[in-house]
Image (tube, rainbow, N blue to C red; front, side, top):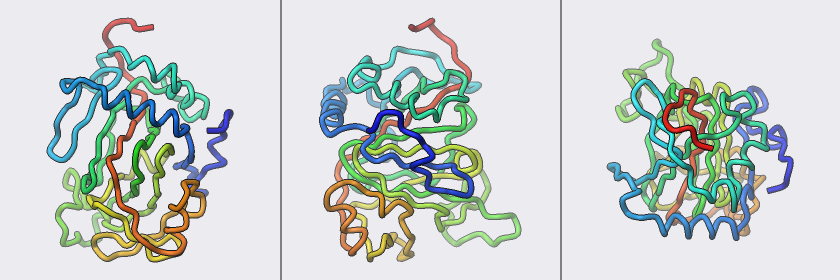
Length: 260
């Protein structure tokens, strides 16, 4: 990643300037180092969910949205200095701790994803997600108004509110990239990942989703990874591999030991 990254250079939504895509946020060597550290993790560090597993770095968010702090893995502030690098983007300048104090490591195997969801009130409204090991496609969704009819797919609902199944924004996440979500895309929208083993593109940045619907990938002309940009431009299929995401956020309320 270039030093002194200016987020506005990577804006995906010029009307709200609420999402920013940063290719090559880390180097290939740094990615290999992080993957090695993850694979060396003791089994007891992993939490098993229904469709994936994860680790919590920096502590666990308890009731009343309070973070009980624990030590972050030391490599996040050394090699590579993920935390310092995220601070340097200025994305967290207005957050209580002016940088991430909590990281969720998610493992996504081919065919695994996550339904549209919100991150909840525990966090300051900015999140940075770093992708390791594989690409994926990240979709943002909006809620339907009460006057709109509900879709037949009942999976697209949350807390009694109906979600429009057509994304308002779709972003291709390359390995080693970061996506920063702020503003309305964080506070009033949802995000999710389709549960597929491969992504098929029909050319000019268009993705064919499992429903048959086609959506345009907003950043398809900005991709840096060899071969991937050509597939999105000309059409073809990219197969997913094991992907590890680092979801970095600032929990506003904190308790526990006074960690340096």
